Length: 95
Length: 499
Image (cartoon, rainbow over all chains, first blue to last red; front, side, top):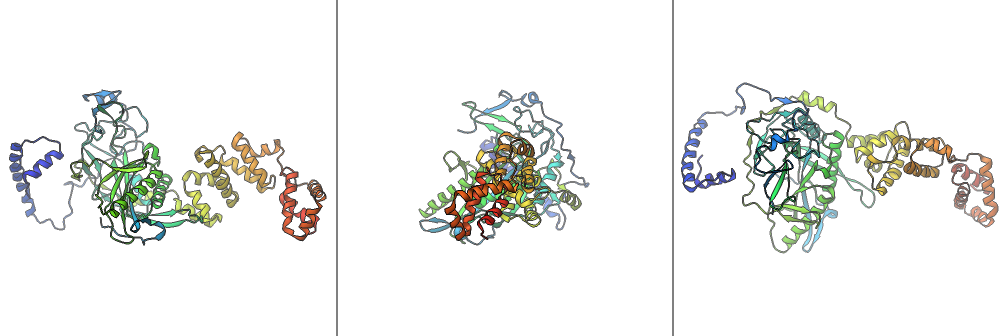
């Protein structure tokens, strides 16, 4: 698998990362090197092997349905550049 | 997903166009907020209507380093709902990240389930109707899947000319997305399906079904085709928040698409919005990028696994569902399918009815609940939750009829009094002298008076026995409706010498 510069620009855009033409050029090379490296894994025959998520079998941790958090509005909005009445304010997202 | 056509085109559901009839194909994606105290992956409260950003944990605000831990109750609720939809429960499911940017989604992705949802295929039996003849038609709507996912926060756009306000209280609340197969063929069917889904989750207690609070909302997929032909291109109408609007949106959208095709155009697959004020759908400004959510398994969450015994335990404690309740009411109480359908249509109505019917004549109880109570509630624009009469009071009225203390006609008056003023039925009957007159002497006198005053009618009745009813009516009137109608009837016939 390899990527072309168009794909790199598209992925950057989807992630909302600004990438210059030069950077995109360079990153295409870097990404292809990484993809090529990972590609070696394809040499291993894994037919019939269930994909696993953990080396040792672990069950997902679960919580009880109890309210244990919240009521910390000041903390929640503390880093927001703009707030009003504890709402986050963001540049208008509809016309 | 491969589309399978499960239905045969039915002429009475087709929409006439300039070039002949058209068939509308509808599928629904319903988002139902899971009833739970805490959110899907955090310990913050799910309560509606809190102060802005009060019910938010650092997990919901996507602060760096915060990790999601699943709320087991939400898992159980999803399984219960799956069981209620007679669906396949998947013992292993996986959470994925659905990536997109929006200010009310602080993570930059929604934790959802894509390839391996917790619930697979199921079936909902939907009663459509009643039609003009008062009959219901049962159709089956397939469920494609049900998966668990996080809700987003709320953006408010009208508070400020240049800024949007964001409240994350809803962010991270558990949703069940229930995806139907494209099995519906009219707006009535879609409305009936959504109504049935809401009834089921309310019976199960897995979602409160309050559409005006946003606890349930539907994305409606609509396409049109010539009857029995290939499926057409569909449009998705997003976030419709009432059952009535779902119907309106489908009617409008189907006709819009038919108009375009008949004018030689083609339908663009797109996302549309329903405007309830204008009653029309319109295109959402299509984003420059087609949806590219780049789903991948969420590395913060292990697969969700449980065994069959876990599912069986939940199945054991499932409440009686509307279809089963309907069958029971028909079989054990002898109610008509029509009456039973109405009584089970909402859990609150069914609960009310069962309290009234307990230890009483089921048919009589059904008549009073459906004709009198629901009729009066409808007229007053009230819900059964706010009925002025308790089941005990209505049951008291029925007891008084059954034991012959009051006549059916007086019972209606008593109902009125209870509705407007409240009180205890038996005491009211005593204090207001509403008791039925069973004293034959008094009734006899009234009958004699009416006969004496109407010799011409007597002759008519002797020629035509059905005229006896007129005398019964007159006597009832003369006794203020308190005479026992059966006794009056017998006496009138005896005195007139007819039978």
